[in-house]
Image (tube, each protein chain N blue to C red):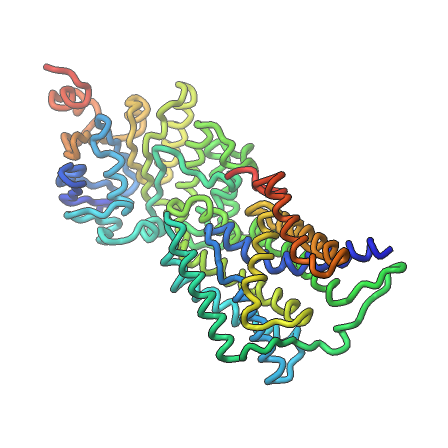
Length: 287
Length: 239
């Protein structure tokens, strides 16, 4: 039974990784921008939620609801005023600039919140669980996974069913022609990054309530996000969820064998997928 | 008043003059054909009209407004629709979505309003059955039709067609001519670059002949084709 329990924990953890990765996947899919500051933005959102809960005494879920529009504006502005200027044929400028932003965010957070590791408290919910047969499933991990499902379902609906989604896809397809059709690519990109930051806020809520975080937690979240995106195949959001789940299951299985092997097992699973299917498990049909 | 008016528009790429003091005008609902040998500057002329290339000198007026320095998107919104010589659909969108994007963003209408109109255009351009197919999977004829359909979805007052009949069979060409005639009869002005001369002359009232970026002649098709200068340059006949 403990084996099944481990798998279930892994799948639920995968939900968190999928949440880390969904924003990254969205931004990459639309504008081919690799945001190296993605992990640090998750940590920034986590500190924002922490600030709202500790200073105003808000419930973390309510705090996330307030943080989300703020993060949207942050993402919108970051894309519109900074990152849009780095986009072009050369892939290096966006990498350098987002790397720089990553350093600025880490040090800014260090200055503001010190190096102590923090946690967002959610009271009784923290240890609440529901029993399914002989399994005990934590309520928060379950909510994390269900949120990941909802986020990815929602993003897919947005991308395939709305005018904004069509603008996303049209711009991703051919930015020059999109401009001729009356789309403003700069604004479309800003919307996409803003949206990614809303997803980041949701990820931050579960990151902050699940485990401790500190100003330098970003880069490792970025790596998990990257691995989930690449295992799943670039550009496919459901693939990203699958990638997150594979990563989560591999990590919990590794940890079950030896607690020190958790991270290693995740990386090994990632490398195995790269060897067997270099384009990921569910690559987009074209390009 | 003319819908589109070019006044001494010039463009140079280094030593190469691609547009040399081009002046002409097109009235509301009028159809003008543009012919000329390869490299004469026909597509460049379109780029100057739509704003994809900025003119070095001269003035472009659209609907009485000077648009010489107006970006392409704003010209699209003010009623210029265009097709490309090499079709450039959004390949990962369906045919209908291609139209919806053009019909909503290209007109600043809400998508729900654009929907019915886009469906009508699909019928008019013979693409209705392909509505839910990804544009990347279309044949050449269908891609050309989609170019036309997408330009129409932006509700143009002026439609710029760039070699839309090239590579089509006689029957296909015939259909296309009928479609374009119908569009023009609804009051849309058309400027049409085409090598398939009989297709062109069955729609347009006037022809403009271009060579080395210069306007060689402009006038009624039969008169123009009979002129010695045009025969020499365009048909390559040494007289």
